Length: 87
Image (cartoon, rainbow, N blue to C red; front, side, top):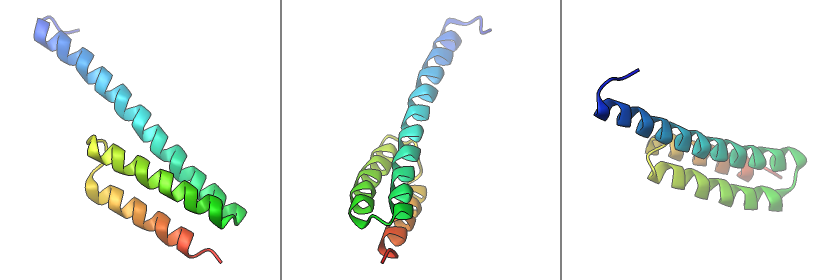
């Protein structure tokens, strides 16, 4: 355990940031999963709606610094490709 007051504060702030980032990442995973579930079901409308939501969620996570912009772009691109490949 840290003895210095500022180090104790940093531990608390780091934990709070880690918890926030974990929640945001979890939300992104859920949104992406919804897209793939809709694709598996063959429901193009649901997949398109889920894609919009997932794109928004990923962009928000990127703007908060949880994900790198290239990672987000790649993720969104792959989701778009998967939805567009549907019949």
